[in-house]
Amino acid sequence: MNGESGRAGAELELAARVIELVRKLAGHACEAEVNVRHEAEALTRFANSAIHQNVASAATSLRLRLHSDGRTAGGSTTLTSTDDLRTLVERTLAAVRVSPPDRSWAGLAPPAPPRLSAGHPGSGERSGLGFGFDEATARADPADRAERVRDFVRAAGGLETAGYCRTVYVSAAFANSAGQAVEGRMADAAMDGIARSDGADGVARLAAARLADLDGAVLGARAAAKARAASRPVELPPGHYEVVLEPDAVKDVLENLAIFGFDGKAHNQQQSFAELGKAQFDPSVTIVDEPLGSREEPAADLPFDDEGTPRRPLVLVRDGVTMAVTHDRTSAAQAGAESTGHASPVSRSWGPHASHMRLEATSAPGVRPGTGDIDSIAESARPLVAGMRRGLLVTDLWYTRVLDPKALVVTGLTRNGVWLVEDGEVVSAVSNLRFTQSYPHALGPGRVLGIGAGTVLLPDSWDRAHYAAPALHLAEWNVTGNASG
Image (cartoon, rainbow, N blue to C red; front, side):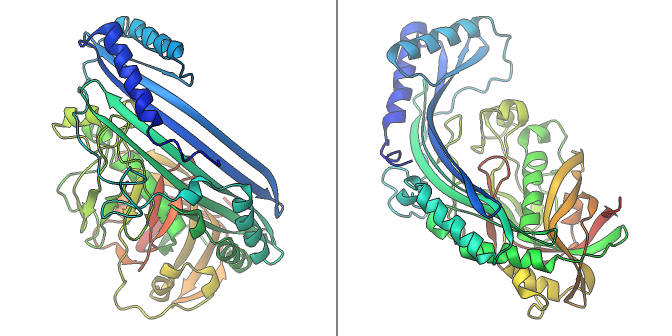
């Protein structure tokens, strides 16, 4: 990835060239927008406590969307010579002439400056509206990632380990024929690893804007402690249990809320639970989408979305009241609203989704200091565990699938450690459990008994979304099966 971060301005120049080509070949009657994205990703994987793979890729891609005579078509390329760009424009113009009418076209984003954000020229190390771009992360090499893997493996104390450490650098630009032209860059890092002891797994993962903020030794020690504490589990019968969800489990809750709950397209189609202005959550719940990062968690995205709309913080839930859903220009026009800056290459088809959600952390009142196996309990979960009479401590949720999108009823399994808690003490590891639970109902009024005092920034399993999650103490979680079925 060395040298990749010295490209500022190249993408915007390329986007401008394509806009001029469209004007030359189609005139001003054709609306055009261009996204240019240079992305470099590097990944160091380890298994059996040894690195087995270093991979890296870097590519520049260009996407063009045209709207003419009520019709819309798009095209893309990774070839950027003058002839290649002309071919892309000609091919897309031919496609738009035979495309079906596009009655949902909402027009182009008007000129508007982005908020200062990740690596925006002139932003400096930090501004009040975003975090500073980290050059060292953008330039990270295999040795930088291997150092963190080594520390993870050593800290696991001889347990079998596996996982990855990755770094990403993106430089991008957007331009349209309405005069909007913006650019930005970002870098981030993530580490995710497990340790195994007598068939029990423990996990530790973290995302960060700076690779230097990932401490492999801390993560490895935590994964090993959880694996050791999860040995010799007992089985529990199905039923409704009080739970403390650690941040990794809360991340899954936030991800499903983002995709199926706060999606403006689903809301327009009445396929979302969200009712704007209604107290659907406990008063302790505030959820914000923060694409520009925050003082607490410096991780962010580019300062504009795929339609060129400047990104901004968006309060989705405040003090339990649902305040907003996410929109691109299409869903916003249908709702009589404005775009919230959540357009993506697939948002017109799959809906616009929040990808930097934070559940605000608070200090849980009236609970005593945490007890039990402290090393295996997330920091923000300890006081919540101490306040639980009888229930479950859950590390992670996985293989979750939505059964009812409207009510957001989700089924899935626990993973990487579950424990029975009695009178604030961890008394036994528990075999993995299946659950079937409405996520909004679990966070409903009167059902959130406590929220941890800090958040953990966690990477998404499939893309580079981030979720800032505290631990959660919930009154009820519907367990529908155990390890025996």
